[in-house]
Image (cartoon, rainbow, N blue to C red; front, side):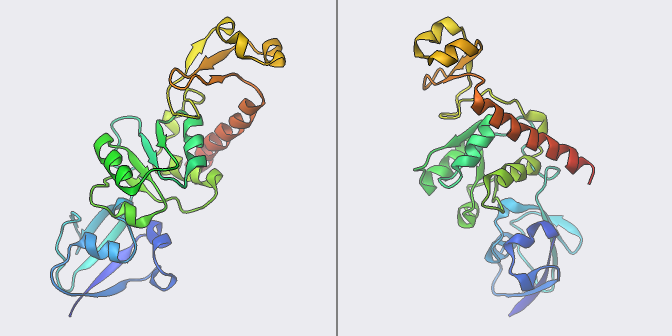
Length: 245
């Protein structure tokens, strides 16, 4: 049986067993496996990999491992991400509903349903060139998934910080421009046009309104707006702290 050596960057430690972290990992293998196959056999989705160097030379994930290879695997980051030509668009699996709302608050195109099936997610991500966000590692390992991320934490407030930093989204933040229910871009409307739908106190204290043209939800800067402002501030403050590290 042939052997080779893996060296993983710290950004991939989350996916490895404790004893595999922070050290060169000697692996045995049979046949002529691709480096993608061996990386994913250790639990690391290919979407989390930014670069692979074999014996000092950059290779693709299709590279067939040779006996004695020393393989350095570097975590994906904003600098290695291929989706840099425009504002990223997201697709979220069934368990990330709160994260989807947070992304929409920040203005990002984020598809979410609580009944998506794996095949649907795979097809949408591939056809629409969306970034798939899921904690299902096996789903991220599907060959059709080209861009995806596995949030490390279960807390939505920390997940949004992870995703914004991972894809360097700070420049794209445009709060309060999407419907939190259906993801459609909002349109400004006059107070008169929505007046019959407003509660008495809303009629009295608010004059600026937006409406979703898809689901007809009406938005204004009520108490919920202040809570969302705190989220936006938290994200943008994190940009400042990250830049000084």
